Image (tube, rainbow over all chains, first blue to last red):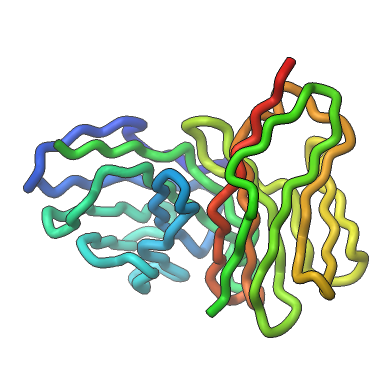
Length: 114
Length: 113
């Protein structure tokens, strides 16, 4: 079955450490996205990529970095510069330009930084 | 700036009762509208979408939504709620099919047996 996988489901880190969240899709989708979800705030866009080797900042990119070396993969690194990294992180993908609203989501990774 | 509001943070309904979740958007023109559902600890799933045409759209799991341009609303409805419908519901909007998606803050639905 096609879909998006995010690993791990739960991640714990000490303050000051960088951490990388994995996102893989086998839907052959062109575009991929990272969102952050906090209680009562909906989803906020961190980064998105519409093609391989290209990505753009979203609304809250500070303290995060991404890469898109393969169509299937879009890892997110939460750096030590992110002031409040504890959150639920969601990866999504869409078929490509023209279908941005129809997003397929992974199951999410809950990151806790202490 | 574009925005999406969902006036109800939390709604509780009895199983078998009807449901309406409200969504209002702020846009200059007719946007593309979506409803997503999120079960606890899971990702989001697309319930339905409106691009153009008939203002009443049908989705999965027995849900429907009605676009009302005069009220800038896109309310989600279901005639008879099941316990498995308990989840978080997000309204979303994009200006065109090429723009990023703006999500509302969500409405949490509880269902009483």
